[in-house]
Length: 50
Image (cartoon, rainbow, N blue to C red):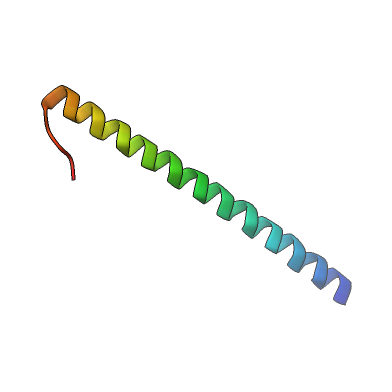
């Protein structure tokens, strides 16, 4: 029983690590998208976004 609990904990930690990595990657993609939108807005309308 203890070994099974240990296996579940290890798998849970592994999934947490994967989820953190995915959220980090998503954050970088959103930051890049925001920069692209800001550049397009400035180019198209001469406006600065905050």
